[in-house]
Image (cartoon, rainbow, N blue to C red):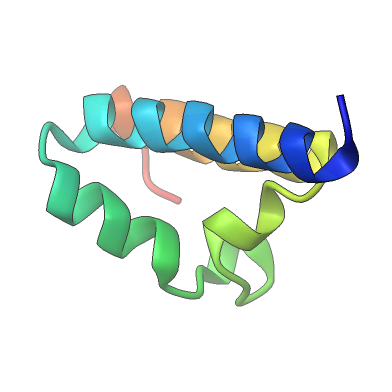
Amino acid sequence: MTADHETEFRGRAVQALAEDVFENRAIALDWLARPNAALGDVTPLSCCATEAGAQQVRRILRTLEFGGVV
């Protein structure tokens, strides 16, 4: 799998998780596209370029899912 395909795969997996967490596709896509302070003011989607970045995004989503504050 090429790096571009890996990034796309991670992005889609994170998007699916965001849609589950927010229970709304439009809200999830908006959240993924906006700079996030917990990620150093970069977009969650851009973090999916690396596995480490995608893990950070998943951690934040799981925290939100279970009522935590990020």
